[in-house]
Image (cartoon, rainbow, N blue to C red; front, side, top):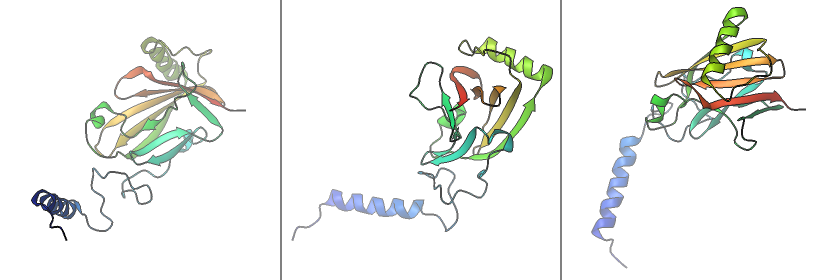
Length: 187
């Protein structure tokens, strides 16, 4: 029978020490838990989307944390791509990307902009985003405000041309062309 080498024994001891040090009590989820436990999210995690965006979006979960994706029957796509699937991740704010661990939403709220407020927001998006070229002014603009467990906040604007089509512009914190996507109901 072979004896374990000193380096192997030291590695085993280090693993045992780290396992004990990283353990947590039942029901308690460390802030930087990785991977995210979708079956047992933290008590402060959002579990439902605001009703105003439920017709075209759904809350989903991955090991990286919570995301918002297209609802079944809807297509979200970037203007120059048919293959990449847009998503709105809880790690979207630039400040959140530098922090280790999975991210989750702690708040989601929607405000509907209409009239002059909707037109002003639409004009601002046209000025900021060279790839945002709607065929017609939006009938309404939904503003989603999101926050994650780090307290980082960001906004997503949904200029809706009609009930079956629109755009999504993630502003985390700035609105950028690569964070713009088209949305439409599939037939």
